[in-house]
Length: 322
Length: 316
Ligand SMILES: Nc1ncnc2c1ncn2[C@@H]1O[C@H](COP(=O)(O)OP(=O)(O)OP(=O)(O)O)[C@@H](O)[C@H]1O
Ligand code: SF4
Ligand SMILES: [Mg+2]
Image (cartoon, rainbow over all chains, first blue to last red; front, side, top):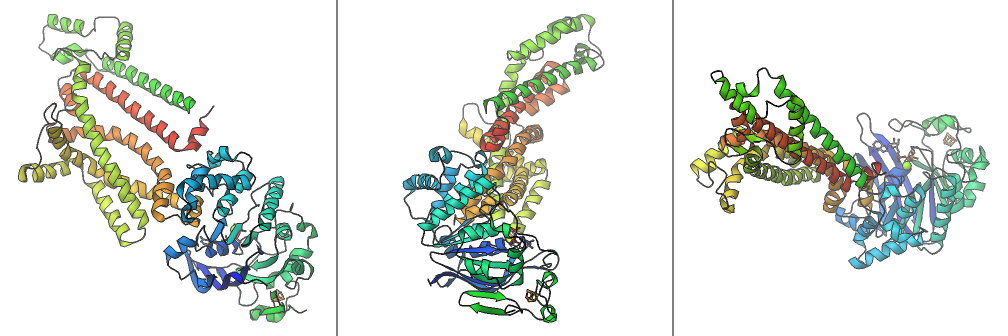
């Protein structure tokens, strides 16, 4: 087992709103290790993007971190000075954002932005242009020189997503976070991007974190999976164990109710009856109780424990052993 | 881009012709003919006839309209029978003063307004942000002529730092610069507050967009994000307003020119209206309309240059 590059411990985050705060993250813990692809999967609204942004120290202005730590190489970046965090961004931890349509500045060319994005790199200024060009080439953009002079809206969705991935890889970060890298794309583009990410992964020795709705993406790309539900990690396992011996009823339901979901054609997680709880007023017991097939009376009153099933397999459930 | 430019310029020309036509119609709609209005009730018929002839009013209407268009297109705005000089020459004598005043006023207001607007964004939510807000609203609500009178009193009358009246000696740049400072200060100060508010509002909107988060995610310094990533987009609505603003600043220049006894388009046109000097009024209004259209069209083209998305909408 490799040493963790990034450790998240008991991360708790609320969004201040007009009414009661939205408890978007409720004690999330996970680790990302060098050379490994970690998948984060869960229904829309379960806090995946919030978690990803917090790892960069970029949670929104109305976000309030009430507890927990995010440690990069042993240093808690949540309590570090803003200047320290700024120096980490892009160079050590980089991110591909959820929506490639709006991720680039509309009035600057792709080239100008890729050059700017190397701000923290320490590369001499005149080499940044060729570094950007080479990276566009590497992610499979057919005409990198032309692409450098294009404005974002002049590229197709797939090309824009490639450019966004190129941007994130520019400074060889130790941690690459991709928030739904394929959701906005059609099936063909998606297959190409997955192919690209797999190729990148083979000669990349950092940690890759892939956030997604799609079990198919997880199956094709990830080594280890974290399943999130209502702002919590409900199950964590290596990818084979997760698909073949899931222990949390939510994971089981996801996989059992639609085996076809393992193909990447399925854009959504298979639907399970009912809705996730309102995060402004999460229930006292298990957040999944209203939708769970194995629910017991205790589930409604006591928060489920974190059960260690195996060395690298954890489920947060009263019935994890049944 | 070329197509877009042609469309915008074509539109400007159509507007200009409409303005010219309606101005010409106006002269005929006003009761009484311009010559007798100009000369007053006690003028002899012979004198009126002479003036009508000089002003071309004895010609058939269509001929008059046609020659008005034709002359205007060549820069000939008619002849002023009072000063016995072409109208265009008079405008050219006064207009540079007004343009200098408007440009300096808007120029310093723009620079300061943008800086204050950006400062408010960098310090958003803090005491400084609120202070700038109060200051801006204060500046907007004080009328230009009140500022003008106090500025005149303090810097010209008490301190004798700057001249109180005039536009400086011809050919003497230093005296001209000194003469423009106070009026430009008075004229521009309201715009500082207005532009600061405007820049702040559109900056805050842009700062919430996803691409700003991307720039942050690459560790760009906040200053660079504000001035390169956000301002380039936020400035676009400001440019549009600024072009329209130049029109209003040139018309409010009348007050400031009066307070500072500064020769300009404002003094030219008020004098001409008092004397019912139609050729001068019409020529000046036409000239200013044309100038205004040039500015607004130039601003539209500049916006299209700054925003590639707009450029593409009008491509083809
Ligand atoms: N800025 C914000 N202010 C208030 N609430 C927010 C904010 N951002 C997200 N939320 C809420 O926090 C919860 C988690 O949102 P988040 O975007 O992290 O979910 P997600 O898992 O990424 O969803 P999706 O799959 O739709 O991207 C949701 O209930 C969302 O409505
Ligand atoms: S704790 Fe109870 S309700 Fe929650 S998932 Fe487990 S069995 Fe279902
Ligand atoms: Mg999301």
